[in-house]
Amino acid sequence: MASLSTLPKPISESSFFLPKLSNSISISRVKIRPLTPSNVFKNSNQTQFSSGSPTFDVPLLSCSEVIERLRTSRGSHKPKQHYLAMYSSVFSGITTDTAAMVIPMDDHMVHRGHGVFDTAAIMDGLIPIAAFHFDRFLRSATMAKIQIPFDRESIRQILIRTVSVSQCRKGSLRYWLSAGPGDFQLSPSGCHQATLYAIVIQDQSPPDHSGIRVVTSSIPIKTPQFSVMKSVNYLPNTLSKMEAEENDAYAAIWLDGDGFVAEGPNMNVAFVTKEKELLMPCFDKILSGCTAKRVLVLAAKSVREGKLRGIRVDNVSVEEGKRANEMMLIGSGVLVRSVVQWDEEIIGNGRESPVTQALLNLLLEDMKSGPPTVRVPVPY
Ligand SMILES: Cc1ncc(COP(=O)(O)O)c(C=O)c1O
Image 1 (tube, rainbow, N blue to C red):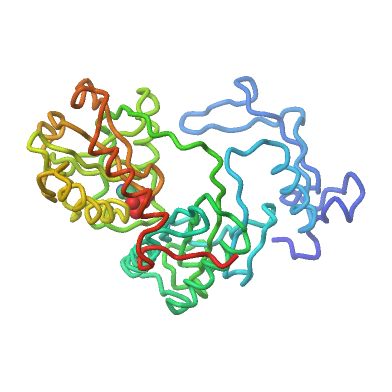
Image 2: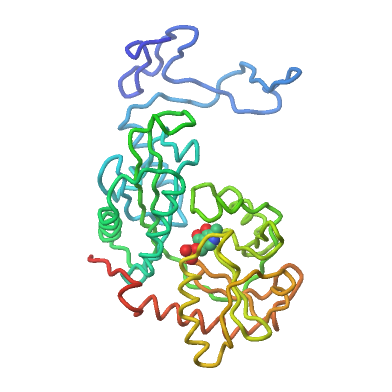
């Protein structure tokens, strides 16, 4: 084992090639040949690299060199999303420099998935239904046995301040509670403190409310214990989304263990039945969507106006869903979006979705000018 003093120096502090220190410790610039069929050989049960002629440079870098390269690599590709500000309780502050928006590798959220998160929209300088997201966030942290590092009001203040610093008026605020950095063990007992991270993402995409296609997901849904909590374990959700994209669809819909309609990978699902009822799957085996819950409240107006006959939260069979007049996806990203085809079945007449449209309008109105209990103004 080499002591720190015998380790090679970063390139800024060393000549181009340093001498080899020992058989196990190499020089500061290591050259590695890229993996090709010709330089890989297999023995009975292993894949190995042969020692071929070097091609890639792998320099040893100082901290400032790493930061510099992070900045360069960020600048070298055009990101689809812009991150305007990040808070981290590791450095107890906010940065607007994307190169510094990093989290420690030994954070258990990174290597064990021991973290929870939530996302709230930022719209016209307001954070709609912020309190619902915040409550779910803290509930998820408790379910994941993460010791919340600050009191509720301090976290709320940190999140609002991060949005304020970002100057973002349209986008989203995403925040995480993690078991924290400490080590690479499985148990979080070596983590010194749970960490809070938050990031503000600018939304540059024009709103798209056109009807979409969905398919039934072949990726298994998470068990209820894990699907009701918003943990960072989104691999099933990601694979489900990829399955949808592979089939030219927007989302893949999960069925629960009993075959009832559950949810999409990052949205809830609802229907308008032939009897003109708004029908939404029960929330006991899926994520309790903040947007869906708000839509249930707002839909009362559509009942009063005679657009709906009633509102029901119940088990929904696939047959009932597929023969509904309307189907919609609901979530803080998608808002309320009409589904015109599910697998091979056309939903309703495949075009007009008057109730879905009415619910979207109610939600947009509520986000802009709903009661103060459901909106947090950002003090810019
Ligand atoms: C699995 C899942 N279901 C439903 C939703 C919708 O929740 P919300 O309306 O709170 O965004 C989300 C949101 O990300 C989700 O990840």
